[in-house]
Image 1 (cartoon, rainbow, N blue to C red):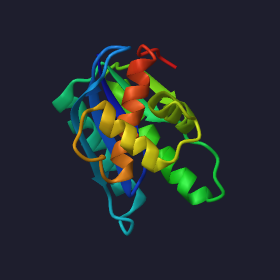
Image 2 (cartoon, one colour):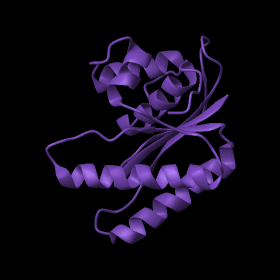
Image 3 (tube, rainbow, N blue to C red):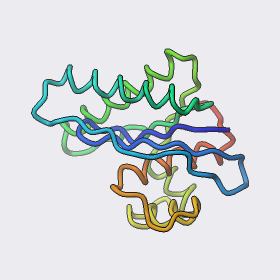
Image 4 (spheres, rainbow, N blue to C red):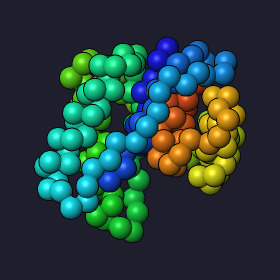
Length: 160
């Protein structure tokens, strides 16, 4: 199974693809960050995200898409941007008939590190080890996207 993980964000949207089966070490296919300018109009930023996610879907042909579930924060503006970016990824997948799963940060942390309260450095280190990389994926948004994909893969690709 091939899973595209998306760590949504308007300025930096982590994106990564892993391949494998539950119970076995996953393999890295690709990972990067989609960037948009904070000075750009919101509509242009969302269109840029739409185009970039669509390119990733065309290039990597995932079987499913895993997106981080937005959770409440004190900064409403950040939550709104994250939710908008996540919605773009969900719509891109839906256009292609791909199953979409939403995973909370604590679910991802628990799946990847065994601890639902792990910090970003621990997640990045475990993603590096699980994917047999020489260095942790950078920036953290990329590691988080790969963690989302691994979490979904290991949960049997269940649709949520």
